[in-house]
Each structure stands twice: as C-alpha cells, then as structure tokens.
Image (tube, rainbow over all chains, first blue to last red):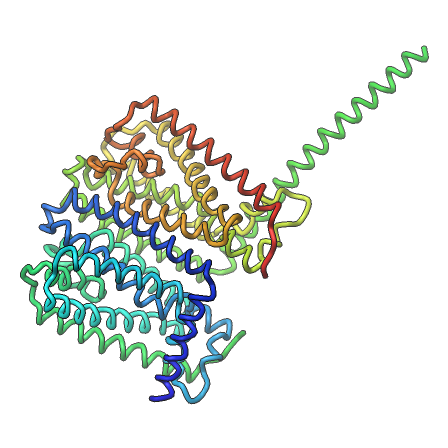
Length: 262
Length: 287
C-alpha cells in the first residue's frame, strides 16, 4: 500500500510540475473555463427566468446546481482526461501500466493526471467559496454538503471506472455506453433534477450520480426539505458497491486475457 | 496576302490558347470532381467494409432519437405553453437542428486543424496539385454523418407528412436549411481555423459556441425574451431557424435582421479565407 501511495504522490507532483512548465496550457485552461462559464451563465438565465417558479427553485439554487454540476465533472476528469481504454487496449499503451509491484488499475487511473483540469478544479472551488460567502451558508451546512459532494464524486469516479472497464470485453459496446453517458449528462445538465421529480423516470435516473446534485445537495445548501434522504444515501452506497464490483471484475478478467496489438 | 496569312496564324494561335485554357479549366474542374468522387467512394466503401460500425450508428441513432423525443415531451408538456409551442413543434425543431449538424458533419467530423498541426497529419494535405482547403474538407468524409442524415431526413418527412399540422412553406424550409448548413459550417470553420494562429485557441472558442448551441437546442430562442443579450444569440443557426420556420417574434426589424445576417455571413467567409491564407504561410508541423 505504501508503494501505491508513493506512486500517487509522484504522479500528483508530475501533474503540478507540468502545470507550471507548460504556461500556454495554463492560460488555455483558464480561457476555456471562462468561456464555459459564460455559456453556463446563459443557461442559468433561461432556466431561472422561465422555470424558476414552476420547479420551485430560486436563483441561488440554480447557481449552485450549475457550479456543483461542473465541479463534479471536472474533479473526476483529473483522473480520466486524455486517456481511454478504448484506444489504449488496441494500441498496446496499456502495457506500460502492467508492471509489478503497483496494481495495474491504480497505476492506470493515477498516472498522467490532467494538469489543465486541476486548474479548472481550483477555479471552480474558488467560485463555490465565493458563493458560500455571498449567501452566508452556515458552517455545519458546508461540512455536510462537502461530505455528500465527496460521496457523490466517489460514486461518479467508480461509475467512470466501471464504464471504461467494459473496453476489455467489447470496444464497440463501450462506445455505446459512452454515448448513453453523454446523453444522460446532457439531459441532467439542461434539465435539472426537479424537472423529473414528478415523473416515474426519476427513479430510473437515480443510477446516474449527477441526479443527486439536484435531489440531495441543493436542498441541503438551501435548507429546504430533502426528499427521502436515507433512501437516497442508501442508493448511493449501493451504486458505489455495484460500480466498484463491475470495475474490479472487468479489470481482473480483462487483464487475464489481455493481448496488446500495438 | 502575307498579312492575311499572319492574321490567320495569329487567329489560330489565339483559338489554340483559348482552347488550351478552357481545357485547363476543364482539367482543373475534373480533378476536383475526381477527388471528390474518390472520397465519396471511400466513404461508401468504409460503410460497407465496417458493418459493425454501420449497425452501431443505426442503434445509436434509434436510442438518441428516443431520448430526444422523451426530453421534448417533458419540456413541451410542462413548459411548452410558455412560448406557445406544442410537442410536434419541439420534435420538428430538433430534427431540423440535427440535419444542419449532420450535413455539415459529413465534412467536419473527425477533423481538427489544431490536432492535425500538432501531430503533423496536416502535412498530408500539403500536396500538389489540388487546393489545400478543398482537399482538407473533401478528405475523410464521415460515413456516420451520411447515415445519420438519411435517418433524420426520413424522420422529418414522416413528421411533416403524417403529423405536423402547422402550415410550412417548403421552399422557405429548404432554402433556410441549405443556408444554415453552410452558415453553421462557416461558423465552425472560422472558429476552428483560429487554431492556425494560436495552438488550441479553436478549442476555447468552440467551447463557447457548442454549449450555446446545446442550450438553444433544448430551449429555443423564444425562451430568452427577457435576456439582455438576446440579440447576440439570434445569429446562432438555431435562432435563425426559429425565426424562419416556427412561430416567433423578432426584437429587431426584419430588414435589419437580413442585413446583419448577410454582413455576418460575409465576415465569416472573410475570416475563414484570411485564417487559411495566414495559417498556411506560417505553418510548421510539430510532429
């Protein structure tokens, strides 16, 4: 375990060094985030202006939804940006991670950490901090929200490991899964959770961790009643176990029959 | 006598030169035509060759259409009355948007100037005798885009013939669609060719353009009635489509709208030409 921790530590150092080294990437990440926030701002406007009354959310809730949504994505992107088993298996690039004594799954996930994304995470965190100060959110709420956000991030992290691990079984099938994932991501971003709460589909969408931002985190931030909190937390824990199991099983079986084509 | 002969000779020379030049033009045109034909042929062959890919495109499109119908239903049944649109308005709008993307996608998908400069793949296009720009666009045509568009066209026809009840002028619809395909292509390319000037600048600009188009796909411009910068959004293809085809209101006069549209299109063409010219002059492959 100590070796694994050292490996992760080294990779974090490399990431930070490359952030300082490649200045143009640094500015590029800044500009990208800036432009993306403009687009999010426009989405925020149209959602609040047209549907605020109907879904019962205030501007504060819409802002937090957008920012936390973005944070969840970019946080997990640190580990997944710029690498994809769909390409790394056929090209043979995966071979470089199958070395003793580090576990290949850990070696793969924690290598080549995205420096551009960590910068976006910092910007996003500062933004969240600004919002917390502006809306004067209590310390207890901050701690609780942070813990739940951590849990949702962890579930989403495992979800991505599980999805990419299907590349060991069938590359074409994995591409379908990506397409599904992208579509659900798009739906959840454009139509926040309350849009679906009155439909039967709400329970189906619960398999996707972004759902819980609107149903769990936002009511916590705004101190409004949370719909069935224990049920939601249980679902999150079950999802974590399922995704972890799928990810590990696929990696184990996949590595057994892995052949690099190169 | 001698003068006549000289005259005849010069006439023959002139006719010869003319026919040579027309022949050259014909050869020139036929070369482009041949190149385009070959690339179309490759696209169809790829489609035949990779059958799994072909079926997967079909399957993805079926799933995507179902999800799009579902989201359109949610928004139309809950919030359609806000802008006076019904479920079918949303469906037709979504299909038309898809057609615009997919048609230009045949020429655009799977290509990135920034990427091809960095990994030196752009060198493949710098070969005589054809124009580099045309070669870049006509090369590697997307077979997926072609299948998607067939799907969407069938979907549109079914919707318009059997279900859609609002009156539509088909000539205006066709003209608007053709214009918007070119218009979207111009916007995408004038942003992407910025990658010639500064590495990855195109990524940043497209990161603003595509999220905006995504928002406008879900929420048509009519939802932006009280948005201060609404006039900036009306020159995105989605909004232009709404103005010409669907019940909507324009905050500026129709004449001003047309004039600005022409000016914007002209500017986009100009930016595209300048970017390519400067870009090719100072191009260096990184590899």
